[in-house]
Image 1 (cartoon, one colour):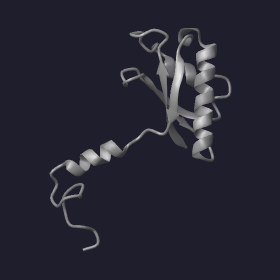
Image 2 (tube, rainbow, N blue to C red):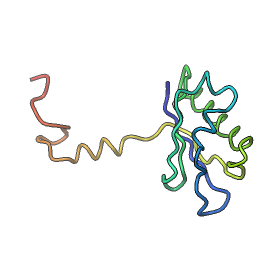
Image 3 (spheres, rainbow, N blue to C red):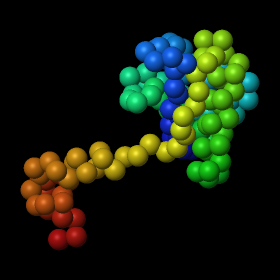
Length: 119
């Protein structure tokens, strides 16, 4: 299972992502065997994001499946007409870990307190 993010752009600036977007995507025909969970993040910048936990044998397949699902939703769900997919991919988590490394936790480069496990 992979977590894939799909950024969606509104048809006109300032339009909010419709409530129920995650449910719309999860309810698409064929999604039941591929999708474990869908969540919408309407406040994400620069565009709202839909997170899809999708079953696939590899990353490329997971990204393709997520993009296909989102494009189908934009075509088939009236509330999403006019929206478009701007990017699809794995969320980038490096900034989170970089921020953790900046936390005062003892020796530089360590996350948390306590001795190194190898010592």
